[in-house]
Image 1: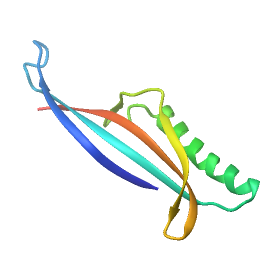
Image 2 (image 1 turned 90 degrees about the vertical axis):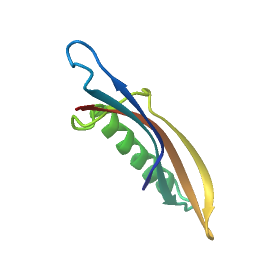
Image 3 (image 1 turned 60 degrees about the vertical axis):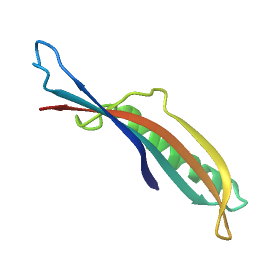
Length: 104
């Protein structure tokens, strides 16, 4: 599994309640999952189980342990087959945007 932060943006915000001391940072992430492909049903099932586990954990913990908030629901992934070197793999890319709120 590989996680890459492809971009982020910072937006300072304020209100009377916070006196202008809030900073929102949006992080755009890609989670890539690789699984060596074999021509058996168990290979595909194992890969699907891995993807289900990751997406289920994200959905169950949408505020990421009170550090961020997932802002793109539903969580969508793109699954395809690619060669990594000479190994044929199932590859899934899950794009995810989260908002980190910091009180200054």
